[in-house]
Amino acid sequence: MTSTHLEPWQERVVFAYIDEPPFAAPASGGAVGCDVELAMTVLESIGVRHVELQLTTFGELLSGVADGRWTMNTPLFVTPERRRLVAFSRPVWALRDGLIVRPGAASTLIGYEAVASQRARLGVVSGQVQYQTALRAGVAADRVWTFATQAAAIDALLAGAIDAYASTLLGNRTLERQLAHEALCAIEVKPSPHPIPVGAFSFAHDSVMLRRRFDTFLASYLGSPAHRQQVKAHGLSASEIDPVV
Image (cartoon, rainbow, N blue to C red; front, side, top):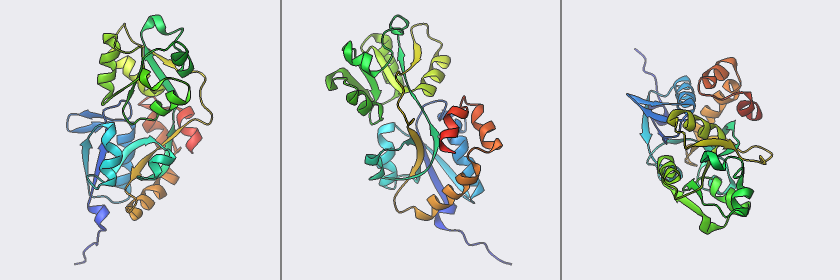
């Protein structure tokens, strides 16, 4: 009888995610979302025996993987600052920013510059790139409110504590459909940046072999018919996939 030797990373991977549909969300028996499904597809294909799902907040993602509390993170935007903390996989999507506003503001608060010129109050999730994007566009720091979760930011918007919430356009439109609240309206940030920001899974810098195997599979899977069908069910289209293929 022969035994199969497994590398440590093949025995168990802890995958951290946040509650942000359509990318990831807790569900009965685990988690759902396009990024969760992609991660599970890759990890199963490269021989990982057990995947443990860890729900966390956005602010904990980078430190959690860097400190070894979990093995890898759900995709987030790639920035030079984040590269110093973690090692990123190949990019897996490219996403435009969007705002959620009250319907009466949908024709005026159309982007970060409009938020700045009107001295509107902007909500963002702590640690997300939209905070720095807003500052670069001229939004005063004291007009940007940070929240631990998307749900907390939306509650503040509904309560009138902020005037707009910034995140990805795809995520905001998904949230708008799910909440179906007449007081919420998702709009695209204009003008859109070029190139479109890309997102990727992240690992500790010393998780070299896992990341290499993960990237090798991504290289052949991203943009394939199976991948496109997988993400289509969650609202991603060629515009989000083609820039990273």
